[in-house]
Image 1 (cartoon, rainbow, N blue to C red):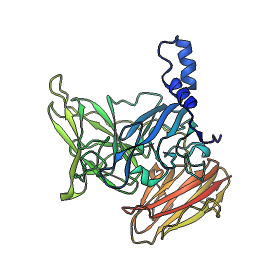
Image 2: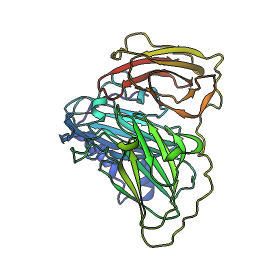
Image 3: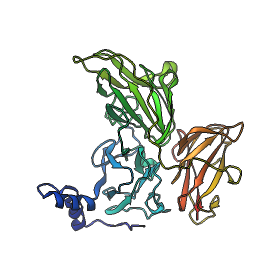
Image 4: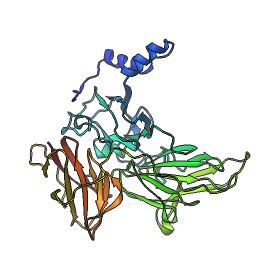
Length: 420
């Protein structure tokens, strides 16, 4: 299913624009036919000097973050990346269990999309949940090339308002003097809510190498999903959750305060906490401050109910000095399709790292036995210790294990494995 990158001619650009906007004023049948063939254009282009000083600011479709893309679970998503940058790029669909050729890892799963060229991404997301897309190159992520991908459930999940909060890198908003992380491209934005609502907050840490502690200073939220996958609902202790670079967490929050109340969302720990956004209750109207019953779990995604750890393939990855990806070298391991894999990740570097497993979701194993945590992940913060994960290698192809040292851009340990 590999689609080759190609030079972007005026003809193909106009054809893409026509496919994206050509359904206005056409009969309903024609609109349906056009929509089924349409590609969502995702132009990447420079946007002046970056306030952070990390290099030229970059944008998808002129916005920070890039446009929120929405899809239905199982329906085909079609996105045409248009590279108007002066440097190569690509798009990785973080957390999506998609076909290998669409994973967006130049030169590993596709050629780099050169300046003036385009690349068509086509896949059917198998899981509903909160995901995100970003440039394949980490330096481009923190300069603005990232956005949310929301795959919607087929049925209602009992919320009255759905808010996506993409938390970026400090200094990437308009006011470079502030060290607060921007939310949806703005410093300390307000989000309107109403008394009595149940709100879904989709938190995305869109930093390439910065961990976040996030606290909602109000009613305790329910943790409903981690890295896009439903979890057993649990109240967040002290209203606090932690997200490594690339992690996502879905919270359900019951709005049980009176009109005019302001509930801040804060980052940091202790005295270092600072607000990054606010939930602002609208004044007037009917007030309902009664708490609701605990929410039921979100509808499950098609992940295995059991992982056979006893017969799993066992592998080990040690995080140490930075080393570039070598597609011509030997893989970390090769697994037959459907085989369970247990991977030990040893951090002996003295610094925390983040590890992202491409193409699969995994269980975090307990340190004392072979049980696992009651949630799935695709991105894991690894401190100065050994973590073990387990997954079923059910997605064929060559897949990246992408590891980065926190707060140190360019410090990478990238390897890969094969599912045959």
